[in-house]
Amino acid sequence: MIHTIDYHTGGEPFRIVTAGVPDIPGDTVLGRREAARAPEIDEVRRLLCHEPRGHADMYGCFLVPPDDQGADLGVLFWHKDGYSTACGHGTIALGVYAVESGLVKADPDGDTDVVVDVPSGRVTARVRCAAGLVEAVTFRNVPSYVLARGVELGPLAGSGSSPADAGSGPSARLAGVTADVSYGGAIYASVPASAFGLSVAPEHLTELIALGRAVKAALSGHPAARHPDDDRLSGIYGVIFYDDLGPGRQRNVTVFADGEVDRSPCGSGTAARLALLHADGFTGTLVHESIVGTTFRARVAEVTEAGIIPEVEGMAYRTGEHRFTLDPRDPVGTGFTLR
Figure 1 (cartoon, rainbow, N blue to C red):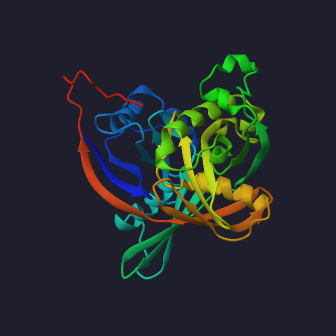
Figure 2 (cartoon, rainbow, N blue to C red):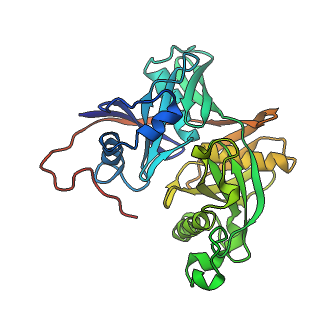
C-alpha cells in the first residue's frame, strides 16, 4: 500500500508520497538521489508515474530526511524517466503541503518559511497565509546563473555529426538556430519559439516536443551542459521555448526529460530564464506565463558572487489523496508510458 497526497501547481501535477517507500540510504539528499535508482525503490516511482496510475507527463516526489536540522524536510523529485535535481513547482506544492498537513507550524496571518533540501541545494518555500488559509507561496531558489550564450544547435552540435546525418526530421530544423544555456537548480537551454516559426501555443505543442528532444540531443555532451562544480548536476534537463509578450512578460513551455511537458511556467526554469534576463539588464518583475495560461511572478531577490537568488511566486492546490496497490497477478506490473 502506497499513500500519496496530490497537488497541482499552475496546472502541473505533483504527487507527494507519504508512505510505502522503502528507506532510501544516503548521507545527503543528493546522495539519496543516486540510491533511489535501486530497483526496489525505483519500482515505486514507476508504479506511481507510469500508466495506468500516472501518465507520460506525471511528476512527484519521495520525502526523505533533510541534510541537517537546518531544513524541515528533504525531497527527491521524480518524473517518468528518472530523478531531477530541482523542481520549483514541486517546492511550491511542498510548502502548501507542509503547512496544510501541520508538518510545519504556520502563522495563520503571515509568512512561514518551509526550508527544503533538494538535490541541487537548500531552497525555501515562503508560505503566505490569511485567516488560516494559504494564499500564495514564494519559492526562493539556489544561486542561478548563465552558463553559455548563443550555442549553435544544429545539426547535432554536441555530437560532431554532419548536416547530412540529421536527415529531414526535427534535428534538420536546428540549422542556424542558437540557444542560451543557464542554471536554475537544473540546466536549461532557452530558445525563442519564433526561431522555428512557431509560438508557445497548444496547437504547436507536438512540434515543440519533437524540437525539444532534438535540442536536448544536440547539446548532449556539449561543454555548455556541464555543471561547473558538480558533475552529478550536469546535462540539459529541459528546453525552454519562449515568446516575448512585452517588457517584463513572457510565455514559455518547458520540454524536459524525454519529451515531458511542464504545464506550469516551470519554477526552476523561470529561475534560469531570470538569470539570462538579469544578465541582459532586466531588473523588474517577470510575469511568466505557461502554455495553459497560468502564471508565476519572479524577481531577483539578491545578487551574489555565485549568481542571482531568484524568488518565484505561485500557488498549489490539493487535488486528491490516494492509496495505490499492485496486484501480484497483474501482468502490466508497474506500468508503461505512451508518448
